[in-house]
Amino acid sequence: MALLTTTVKVLIVDDSAIVRKILSDQLGQDPGIEVVGTAPDPFVARDKILQLNPDVLTLDVEMPRMDGITFLGKLMKHHPMPVVVLSSLTPEGGKTAMAALDAGAVEVMCKPGGSYSVGQACEELIQKIKAASRARVHARFESDGVCRREALSMVETTNKVFAIGASTGGVQALTEVITSFPANAPGTVVVQHMPAQFTRSFAERLNGLAAVRVKEAENGDHVIPGQVLIAPGGFHMILQRSGANYYVAVKDGPMVCHQKPSVEVLFGSVAKYVGANAVGAILTGMGDDGAKGLLAMRQAGAHTVGQDEASCVVYGMPKAAAEAGGVERVVSLDKVAETMVRFAQM
Image (cartoon, rainbow, N blue to C red; front, side, top):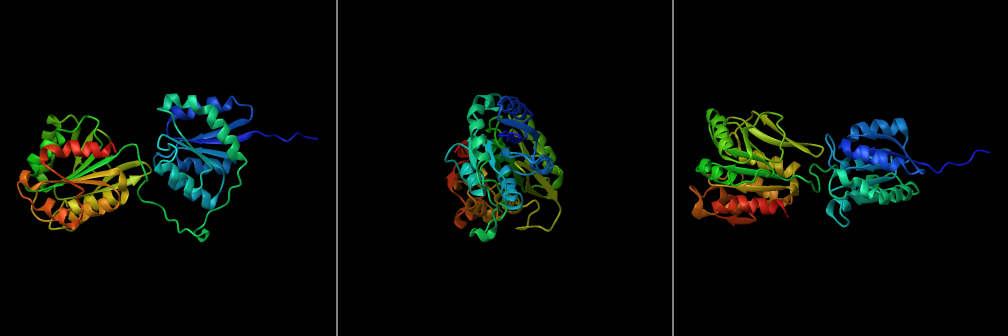
């Protein structure tokens, strides 16, 4: 009579090759666990789940192409199985941890420190994997009583996004703000009302003055820490998301608020795809471009800043945004950068 095996087959899903290697080595040392494979993102994971039929999945949150929480929701609907979420974003009781549990994770565990210290937590992870393998997991549908739809923005991310809009007087204002950013400032997207032939030279000038890298945005540019993307004159710039990665689309189209590029277009996309992981700022300028977009950002959970009247060349756009309810904090120009950085750390 054959003996029943109690070995738990595990598939590791994490975009870090270092983490995948450490987890594979450490988990594989336990006689009760067999690491049957690894995957760098949810799309590869989907195929390997069908191919390898693991008992338990360990799942990261911040990954390319699709974030872990979105993938978890799809997995629990179409192919329910025990999942242990392992991420630097999941301290006990945190927003992402709650989102993971709500999406169907059996266990949630926070990575200790960085990639190289993952091995320190493997003993606890082994116990969580074994416990998860005994869990009864059922498919989750909208008929369960909660109407679930895929979130366009993540609950929480490691890297935040800055979004800034300016017009009349904005060249000087943006110069002061951007040159005050630290070299590791969040990835920043900027709309300054300016003719097409001037945005590239403006970006190049700022690049020579600032600690961050500044460039005129090109279609598909990634929004990454330490880099500022300025919308090219004559085109709208839209922020989009692929998994945990943000990038910009540069598109033609009709004027919005009599402008192209339009702050309204940029801010609206940031509200939609970045949500509470963004910090928005509206600086000196004529008109009301960006007022509704900044409000949408604030309603999505983002922190927002408006330049005060005393330091504006034209107190139009910040005033309209404040009157619409989109400005959380009004500050003088010399305080904009430090206020945004402080908000990003909250």
